[in-house]
Amino acid sequence: MPYLQPSTWRILGLSVGAGYAGFGVWMALFPRHAAKTIFGYEGPESTEAGKMVSLLHQLLGSRDLTLAATIFIFLYRRQEKAAGMVIVSGTTLCYADAIGIYVRRGFAPALQLFTGASIWAAVGFGLMSSTTERVIKVT
Image (cartoon, rainbow, N blue to C red; front, side, top):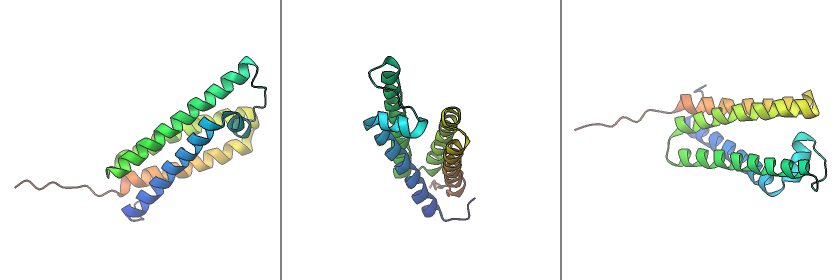
């Protein structure tokens, strides 16, 4: 995958971080809308199940914001391999979300998330394989 320049992989990594940040803010601030859009849950919030769904999506939002912050920090510190590992690791969480979506909404929406997560995984692998090792010269 190192067919692109390291700077291109960095920009793609930043876009993955921005995607996680966007999802995180959306789920944290609008958990009911996220629950309806992602998982198709339309129950009333006044029930115990509705409150738990809102709380769950706020937690999912904090998870995504944490992943975004970690990616941004690693890329800021020029640690592209670490950022790539975080992206690939976060992709496994997206695959788990896709399984939940498959159970609630069917194959097509789950396939959409699975495809998007796979593209993000490719960016993560690209970051891990495209970085140039820094050599410290000891004098």
